[in-house]
Image 1 (cartoon, one colour):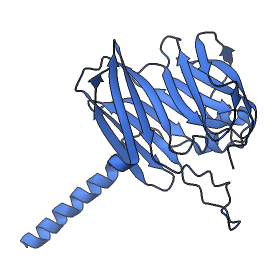
Image 2 (image 1 turned 30 degrees about the horizontal axis):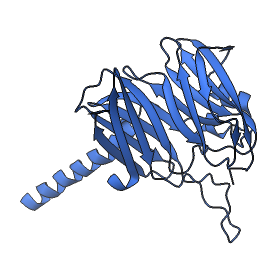
Image 3 (image 1 turned 60 degrees about the horizontal axis):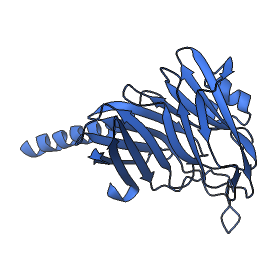
Image 4 (image 1 turned 90 degrees about the vertical axis):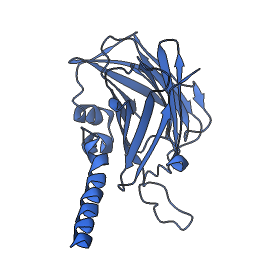
Length: 105
Length: 147
């Protein structure tokens, strides 16, 4: 779990800033290998975030998100110790997930 | 008998696990929108229409990107009740980059890094109720990042 995602959730005043760095090749399917054949598409399509089990963000991604995707979003009403959880599913059916507790900035 | 019961229990546990990631998402991936090569087609597939330009949306991106493979984009919406932020790059092979839908407790704000094939406007479209609002930022790309 820890290998494919790094996360941080910091409470700054009223807002909790969640930063996520995922490990994923994000291949578009339009890129060619050194041998001239196309590298098959391999990219994250769905991303979901929850806090204390309640869904706060749902994203759909195409091939235009950079390799090793980076994401920041802001939550309100979170408290120190609340668990933020992020999961993804790619076009090949693989999944990844990570979670982190909210800390004071 | 006990063995078989254990096996059946394990089978049920496994199938429950397999269902979790699918059930976690309300929406299916919008194939039509993401495969659209034209901006208008991609917007239509997301049911976006009658878009109003808004100064309450801020799109922060570099004026010039050396490498189109990684261009950081920040979108802030001060429009009340922002439900979603869609990001488009008009001159990319497929125009729709991402669509972020916010639940209660999340701000209309997102930072991410995107690929850009060539110089283009980066367009953010915000949904609030049945209305759509947009803002854009021109990014000059020196090296194709779509490969």
